[in-house]
Image 1 (tube, rainbow, N blue to C red):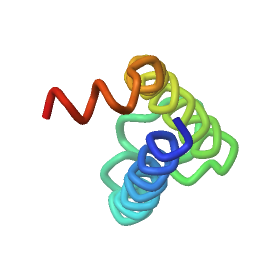
Image 2: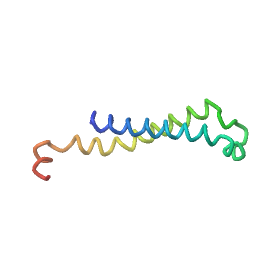
Image 3: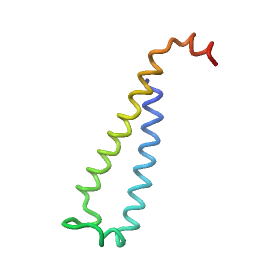
Image 4: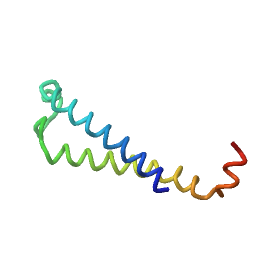
Length: 79
């Protein structure tokens, strides 16, 4: 499970970093679609990052539990 979560965390952090970079670069375009908040509001950006990371880790939980339930010898025999 540790390996699955580590791999998922690396992908999530990479995606969040790319998303934040794109958000900062596209702030002028986003400014017209946002009402009541700025395009570079740190609280909103942090909340979106946390919700995205939690959703990604929650989506990783089911495959990790399924992989942990299989006996290693059985997994080797099936491949």
